[in-house]
Image (cartoon, rainbow, N blue to C red; front, side, top):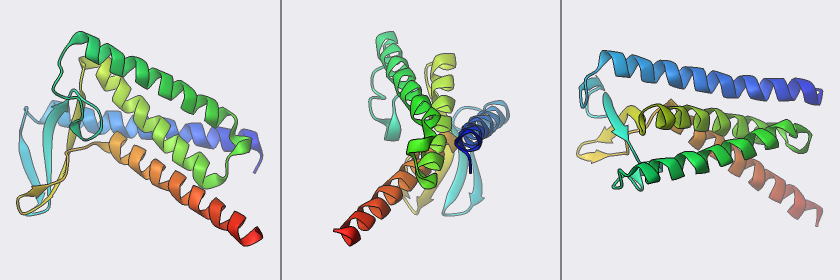
Length: 166
């Protein structure tokens, strides 16, 4: 596949992730009140509405200062810029890496959009088993984690190829 086609496909993946993330967050924000909980699968999965002023897994959520939010936005914009640059130079990437970076890029854009708009990120997917809850997350977070997984698999695959050749 030509690099230009791969580049367009990667950016379409990122835009699709951003659009799906925005749509699902809009649904949650317009249909649920704060801290509502709707059981989807009893004992395993709820849809809730919560705001996360921190980053992944609620890290740094304790600080509500304007400076804290601005620093998170600035760092996120830098990360998004680097991801866009890496995707633009797609000829250097294998397919799993390109898809992984596109998923991370789209997810990062979704979460930065929230942070710029309201100072926190809307989370709503709540998985649990009994009293053990995973951190509440959203489509952007799931895309970022999936993309990171693809990058790790790609690196492991590349490492095995080099070991076989050696």
